[in-house]
Image (cartoon, rainbow, N blue to C red):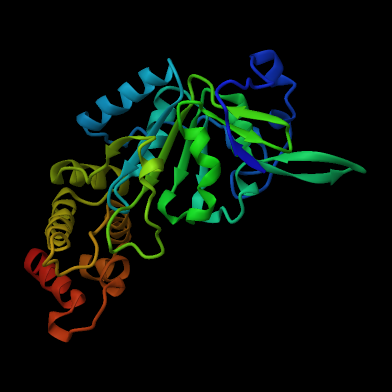
Length: 315
């Protein structure tokens, strides 16, 4: 079981030499909080030469990295689905050569999924840590909590101590704290908005523990350049696809929105790939966007509205 850390208690493992002998850092895992081994879990991601980051976000992430050299730093990254939140976190890890762990929050079903559980191995009862517990023990890494607001509220408890200024959580099975070290960056990502189904309201006390970065779609000219570089589609076609997406995004905003969600950069990349593979843009958009839109309302339906946008921009 977990328990929120008390500042006056010291972690039993408090240095590099001790961490090397720490069973948390040594044991493999295959669970929701990480892949099978800490080596796989904490690989440094490759830097994507085609990834474009806006100057504002670059400055903010550079400041996050500088702050993390002094103490563990926690960031909440919000923005529309498919705008590149995961890739921004990966860019930060790759740029500064930091190991990277992605935790799939919707897969966490039990508090033990966070840090580990007791199991029997070769006739002995031993602690089985998760990759998250191993990453905390190793330190100096980027830990990415994906889809934080799809985590049920009953499972938030272990995060409070880890994310507050004590930077630690008590694990009963270990008889000690797990403690974040300087150099560790936690980035939690979530999509905000009523169009997202299966999400939970976030506790203000939990949200207050983060600094916040807003991720947005690239400016249209940058998004078109990215499509050309990533997919090989022609420049004119890339601009046309971005124009469709830009207008559709406007129609998905505000109280009188006629579309239920914004067309993501991820969907645009898939569309451009299909066009580069030989489909016309209407057919490609049908596969990536159009057929996902509701038809209720006939000519006033979201699908009909999107088709009018496609007609206006693609003819």
